[in-house]
Length: 342
Image 1 (cartoon, rainbow, N blue to C red):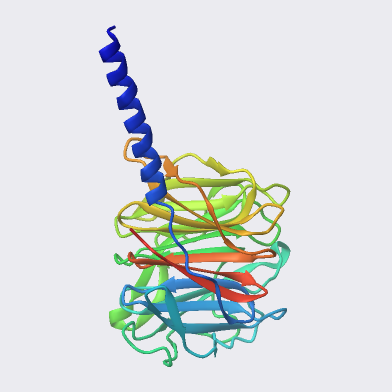
Image 2 (cartoon, rainbow, N blue to C red; image 1 turned 180 degrees about the vertical axis):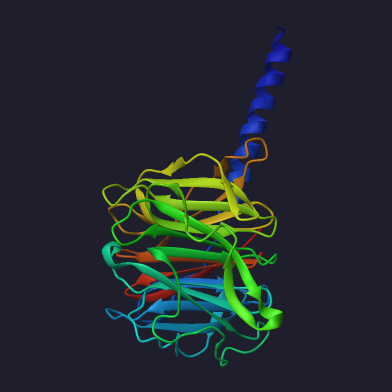
């Protein structure tokens, strides 16, 4: 091979390397400085395309649930006051929330703080997704006693897309093991039935071992799930999949971090994945992005993670509306940060 050809291929390799570096750099989001909005723990967050934000959390050291509505303005959120989530007679732990395009709110929680006494319940309500932050959720399903029973479980995560598909993942409760999912939809809201019909069947479907699962769903019915392998390690795995009917077709479980815990994830229609996690021993908050691989339908191409939270952080949550990503976590009080999406 001539020297000219050698230099050509060498230059082409350098150009490809530079392009890959620039692509990775372009996918590293810039997160706004953290701002405290309340006291509490175990926050969950959902955001509507209108920019209306719903956040739910548990009281600091207590067993009652509260929520805020906020309006996202660029890289800041203007929050309304703290309001009580359904005042059921039972204890409430591990809250998570979702908002449909019509403004239906789904609130899922466990009445047990630990696996041995974990039972999952839900309530459905309604807000005006184009309304203000001073409005209240109108609850449409039974909130007496403990609400509507789902399954033995805790550490749940719920998502809904514009097609009305509802996904729920959770750890098994009452002494069981493993991770389970459910697929459903609101039964007949036009006819006044706001309960969830579970298309996946009467019981949850086992899909993996692990703890602290989190699920994300886009409008193409593509799914990304992340979880921690066990209490005794700092290993994070993900699974890609698609949902159809009452079934999630998952790819294999794949390692993506070996020094992290309590992951949370959001998925855009573009295939961009936004993830938050707590680092292993230092307990810092990190964010990373990834893209769904077009050549390998089980794979996510991950980019480097960036530190966005100081020491002693806990309980990350993340949501996106296609233009912005909003992360919440506990860092002394409850804080939030916003990133502009490419």
